[in-house]
Image 1 (spheres, rainbow, N blue to C red):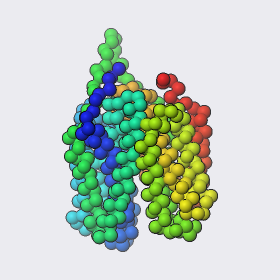
Image 2 (image 1 turned 90 degrees about the vertical axis):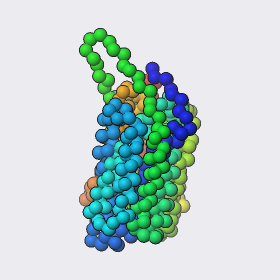
Image 3 (image 1 turned 180 degrees about the vertical axis):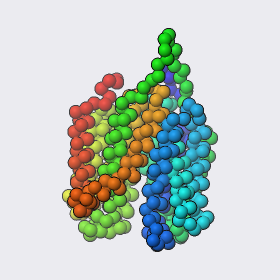
Image 4 (image 1 turned 45 degrees about the vertical axis):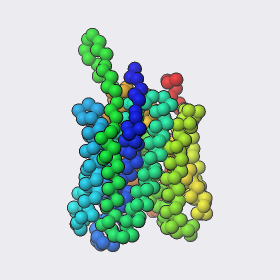
Length: 385
């Protein structure tokens, strides 16, 4: 069994810098209205969604080579460099097509980086320390998301081009990538007879399907929150922006305390997380009051930030060590694919119900309730002490 390796302060900072900058493509979200006005007649939604497709490609490539053909540190350096170049380049020209090319480069760089943090934490830490570090990773991801959206909003008020300089935040990850620790390599014990290759556990596909479904169901709610607040006269766009910020703040809080939650709840973490998500979307669906809808979104943010690190803990103990890197990449790739596929889900809802807001929220209530029941019955950690 591989021993836990002691990681220094710079190594921990390098590890946590990866999730900190992982929401990089959201920098331009506050500038979408300005971009739509500037690129009149163009579908500027591609500027926001195109990176997610390239994240999937980059993530799958990273999973097949990290720790085997290419060092984790090298991938982090290359990924953050592509992130910086692709993210900031549109600030230097005025061309819609070239901007989309750069967004693809940004997404690919993010894809190379996205599985590294969780894979390294799983490889470097064991037991309670691993759970705590996965929680801190979720905390950094949410905190980075808050900062990047605030930064993007501030820069968008100056100029649509200036907004893209917000991606220079990736320089933090680029500098710290040089101090990224590598996991201990455990040589497989050779036995007589034909060499057996370790198979990836079915846990990888179960987690991937779960998080793919979560993003397909949850993304439409996040996208339509501002519309919902306006429809219900619950404070308008400003109140919706505050609610979404508090959704992320709640995720930070969950990441901070996840280690303790997992220490005591263990097998019940999924059930608790999805139960909170169920209660949250139910409040958003049934309540017309802005405060209650905000509380609902905070419950969803807290619940998902319990589900995510629990899923990565499950992956770490449910699949052979040699397949963790690829398994993490598959999970992250399908999770990002779920965000992109949510647009298809909205088209399905529109075709059936002739609207996409209330039907999407009600569908989330049903799905999250079903997942809660499943994990009350099913214990993902039953074979582990």
